[in-house]
Image 1 (cartoon, rainbow, N blue to C red):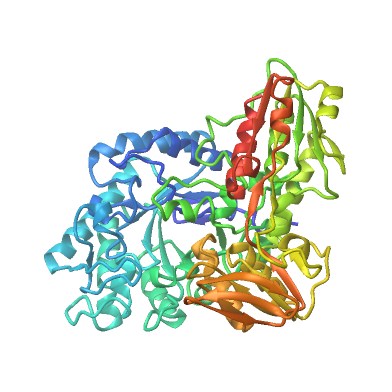
Image 2 (image 1 turned 135 degrees about the vertical axis):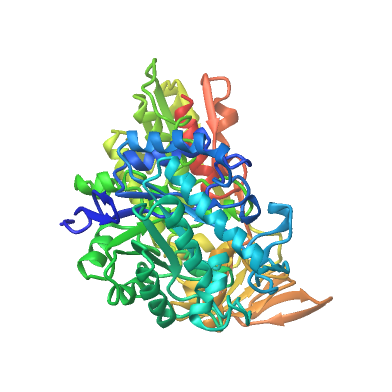
Length: 640
C-alpha cells in the first residue's frame, strides 16, 4: 500500500532508499560552542535506525552571530569538524543519510543569544522579536557569503552527505529575497534578480569550496503569509532560477516569524495544508521537490507522492513522536506508530523558552540512551492506580521490563482527564495517542481492572511489590452562594456528554479548560458566555494553540467577561463583580464550572507502611500538564 514512499530517489549524487525525510527542527542539544554532543548524536541516531530515507539536521550556524537559539550545532571554524565527523560516522553506521542545514538567522534573533546586534538587509526589526537590526554593508554581505561557503566545505569534510541552505522562515537569506524585509535600492535590493543576488552568490561560493558534486537542497517558504511578503508565484519564479544555479532539490515550507503558525502549525491547522505550494513548484522544475507541514501519517505521505504533489515528504514532530515510523510503516505495523498530536507542549513550547526539546507522547526524546528499557533483574508485581495517560505510560514501561502489572481504573474508560481534553475542536488527535497506549497495554499483557478503584483492601489482597499512584485530579466547587444548584455542572461531565446543557450557557473560568469547553459548546450551537478573573483568556494554554482557540471563540461570537469575579448564582443569572462594581448577567439555562482541579491522592498515606515502593505521579502530586504526567509515568515504570 505504500509503494511510493518506499521507492528510492536521488538528490544529486546521493541515492536515498525511501521518500521520508527527517525535517530539520531545533532541539538545543549541542553545547554553546556548536559541538555535537552525545545527546545530539543519540537523538539523530535513533532516526537513522528508524529507517528514514534522509535526515536533515537543524540550523548549523555559519557564524556564531547568526544563531537564533543557544546551543545550536555549528561549523563556523575548523575546530568543530572533528565532533561533527564523529556524529556523521555514527549516523552512517546506523544506516542513515544525513544533510546539514546551514543558515544565518539575520534579524530573527536576539542580542541575548548572540551577544551583538542582529543584522539584516534593511534596518527593520522582526515584528516578533522587535530588535532593530544593523543594515549590512556590501563588505559584510561578502563576509557572510564566504562564511556560507566555508561552512559547506567543513560539512563535506565532516562527511555529511550534502547540505540544505535554509532560505525559508524569514531567516537572513529569506530576508534578502523578500520585499517584506528587503527595502534596499542597491545591487541587493529592488528587482527580483537583485534580491536573489545574495543566495546566488552563496550557492556559487558553496560549489566553489565544497564541490559541484556535493548535493545541495534549498529550503524556502512557498508563501510568507504576511502583508507584502512573497507568495507562491514569486516562489515559482525563484525556483526556476535556483535550479539553473545548480540546486539539486527544493524544500518548500511556509511562513516567517510574523506568521509563525505556518512554520510550526498546531493541531488546529489541517494535515498537509501546504502541499499545494510544493505541487505548484513541482510543475515547473525537474529537480526533486520536498513538501512538509502537518504530515504525520505514512498514508498521507503516500497520497502526496502518488498525487504528484511532491517527490519527498518531510516530517518534523512526527519523528519526535516515533523515530521508528518508517520501519513500522514498512512492516505494516500502523497501529504501533506513536502519533504526533500537534500539542506543541514538548517541542515548540520548550525551545521557545530556550530549553531542550522533548515530546509529550514520547518521553525518550533527547534522552534516548538514559531512558532505554532493559529487562528487570527481579520480576515484581506492580499495581497502578489510575488509567490516565501517566498511569498507562507507567504500566506499559513496567510491563516492558518484565514485571507483572495490574492497572486499576475506577471509571468506565481509560484516558482520564486527557480523554476529556480530546473532545473540544482541534483536539481529536489526543484520542489517537490514547488508542496507541491502550494497544500497548494489550501487547504487553497488562491486566486491566475497569470500573475498579484500587483500595487499601485490594492492595492487601494483591500483595504488590510496588504501587504507582496515578489517580489524577478532581474538580471542586468554589465557595459561592447558589453553587449547588441542579443546573450547575462541571466542564468534564459536559464534555463527556454525561449531562445535558441548555441553550444559554455560562462558563465560570476562562483558562484553557473553560475556553475549550466554550469552543466545544459554541460549535454545537449553544449561546455561550465566559467569566474569567484574569485580564485574558486561556493564559495557561500553549501560545501557538491559544491563537486558534481565541479565533474560534471570536468567530462564534462568545460573550467574554474578563477581570470579572462571580459572587453569586441566582435562579435568573449570575452576579459578577468587575471594575469595582457588581452587575447581574444572564439569564442562563446551564452554568459550567471550569475553575480548576485539585490533586486526588488518598491512597498514598494508606499504603505507605504496607508496600515497599510507592510512586505518585502527575496530577496526583500537583496539577500540571499531560507532558509532566506521561514523563513521570515513564520514569516510574523505568524505576521499578
